[in-house]
Structure formats: structure tokens, C-alpha cells
Image 1 (cartoon, helix red, strand yellow):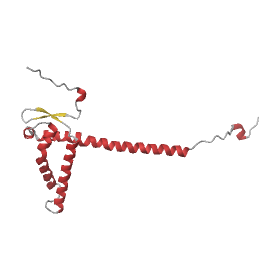
Image 2 (cartoon, helix red, strand yellow):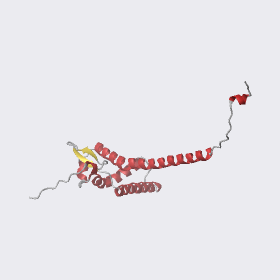
Image 3 (spheres, helix red, strand yellow):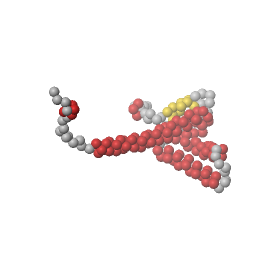
Length: 171
């Protein structure tokens, strides 16, 4: 009988963005939540952007009434029609219906929070931080150059003044 090769994963190779959550109605089981790939994230962003655009186009045509109720219903329908695909991407489990049937609303909200934090909030904060850091460094460099230019070279006048000569006192 051939030996089974066990794949050993080095701790350094484990993605720190992978989180675990427990799901279940009666008995809990652990499910790994993986970050979305950039391609998946862009597709998801496009899907949401397109849906919001469709909603506001329908609102402009008076096909639906404005937020918040109609908008929430519209977004829930969008989520409902795409949640299966999203669940398979973030859990790497094939049967999204099974995962969803084992999940409570509270557990789903925990998963949504993880996906949002890992795929949108943290990367966006890093990108914003880069621009702020760049602006701060640029401002500091400009100020430093201005200070150097305004100070200019100091000219030595070789003048000696003593307090006795300045007051005119003689002994």
C-alpha cells in the first residue's frame, strides 16, 4: 500500500488574514474564512456599484421610491442572489447552501464583518495612510528647504565688543 504523503504547512506560510468562525444551529463547527482575491474583490465591488447605479436609475424613472426602505430591499435581493457564490469563495467549501443552512444571522454578520475588515477596511486604511504619509513627508521636505534658503549663509564680521568699551568706562 502506498504511503500517504501528509502536507506539512509551515507556520510562516499560513496567511494571517485567514480567520476561523464557528457556525451551526445546534452543534458548532469551525469554518475558515479566506480573504477575497483582488479579482474577486473587484468583481464584488463592480456588482455592488452596478446594482446601486441600477437602483438610482430606477428611482430617477420613478420605478421605485427612494431610500431607505426600497434601497435596503433592493440590496438584500442583490445579496440573496449572490451570497452562494460569495460563500464558496470565502470558505472554499463547495456546497454554499449547506453552509448557509448551518449559519445563523448573527454568525453571518460576523462573517460579513470579517470580509469587510480584511478586504476593504484595512487595505483602504493602508492606502490612505500612504498618501497621508507622502503628503506629510513632502510638506516636511518643503519646509526644510525653505528654512535652509531663508537662513542663508551667515557672514562673520569680526567685530569684537566688550562691555567696557561699549560703556566708555576707564579705570
